[in-house]
Length: 532
Ligand code: GLN
View: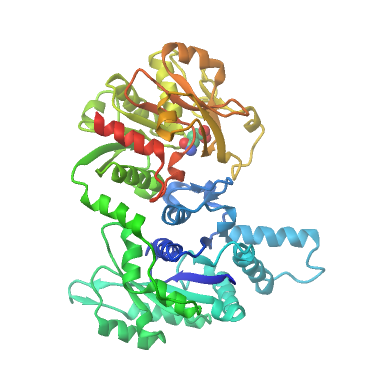
């Protein structure tokens, strides 16, 4: 089957959930047996979001091939259960970098290099790339930003051209917002009309409109929108707030989003998507009566998007343990030895979050010391694992100024240190240890039992490592290296076997946890928290 291309744009405001709509449509098409991938085009100039502060666009997600990606790729993987790669996330910066490289090589044969056609040609080439491999029946492309932004114009122009070139193999979905004016008790469609006009101005006529709303939109209002926007009344769909993002595929299917897409590209739209497993998950999520209380210790806790994948992994793991998740965000900057007992009171388990830099680090040590001494199930991820190591060095091994050289280059006990291969690197972007690496787990350890095997592959994003010079000292004192890279022998997982569940991973298991395939280590951590 020739690949079909679906473009998803957004208007009125950002943060409407284009990623969730794209992922939900992908879920429905996959459940009908089609092969689907989703890609995200971001209009900013950064080459990738790797150098961005989480306050900008939330978490940085990492693909198996080591691309630092927009957090929407995490949604794509969690909904579709399919891995993405660097080809699934392109920014304006990458497009320009490619074009400028070609110009320097002389590929343009003396021509003046311009936004149209050179930038738009490069965008189009990339947009079609995943589809050219004959691996996918559908490629869904989400365009970041909002229609009307100057920076998204070259992307929209490329969509306009592709739509013309692809004909019936192309569908455009536009997502807008219908605000509710409380004083007038009225929903307003005018912003949607304006947004569609903006899209039409750049030559794109949407086939389907998805209206994001907090209140039910009446059929007559949908017809009005259809009339003003040149869209089939049946192709005006509302996306009303639901308790969980994982219900969105169902609300979209109820309004025939998948059927409408199939009809538009000329494919049979009868039959039903097989959502048995998906519905099982939702059923467990809704029917759980007991709650597991988890504390997440981190410095970005005022912005839950900074820990998106951890939040979702915990929710999935709680669901598969038939528990509701009650997640407490604990600001590590506000945590110290004197308030830690109070701040961690009533928690069944603690996660110490990944991160960079000194800010909030001492609070993480306080949390870890308390959790270790009181045997609370504790999970350290990346910086969280490094903090476990430092806290143990200071308080058990008696290495008073133990630290990571990230925080103190002169630390006498540099138990976490820069890898030799990192020492000469000065560029910040894309230079960490990134992507999936093999790891061999120690037979009988908590992780080995949780995964049910000893050879795993998980994704990394860090510069610093456990300093193996100290390995023996740690092991003698009871902190054991239970996961190791088979080639470099770098320590990937530590555990204190004497405790109920005290495990730290240098890798990020949260990037590898989906609705249909929750990460075993998260599931086991929640199980331990419940059993406590
Ligand atoms: N800052 C630490 C490092 O670079 C940990 C990174 C992380 O938590 N992702 O090694």
